[in-house]
Image (tube, rainbow, N blue to C red):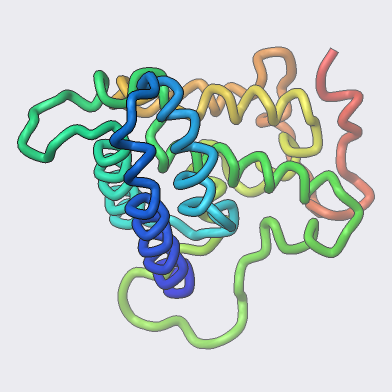
Length: 215
């Protein structure tokens, strides 16, 4: 998590540098839609480089959402003194924290279904060392569990099916105007009961075939 915070700090600085260098474009006369598309292709790409691997706390999500809002306001020439609702500012854009969540979940599914070494790291949790007093640091596997609304066993089973995992990703990523968590993610894809199954060895030979999960 500490490395994620450091990486985010660097990405924020680079995103602001890119935004300020593009002032001639922001101050020109293209439509807002064209500016937003250009903003996402340039500034957002710089800000989110490697974001799929970040371990995001609530504080980091809030910090990054605030930065993205300020960057977007600058790109659209909206002065900080102008009061505008986020729903109006963002339009159909998702919060940047939701974009990161979607990328993180999609990456986890791709890695899990691969035959490469990365598959063994998706749900890895550190077991060595002595537990320190206080709240434990957030790890990537726990974050995925919170993102999907599933426990680790359910995660492994659901990610094995591309269709089921795609549906979980879709229902767990909220639009900008939705301020409450969705419970739909725990219901799987609606066409299978993968979240009710157990898998003794998440990376062993007893995993359920993806083809058998959905009809």
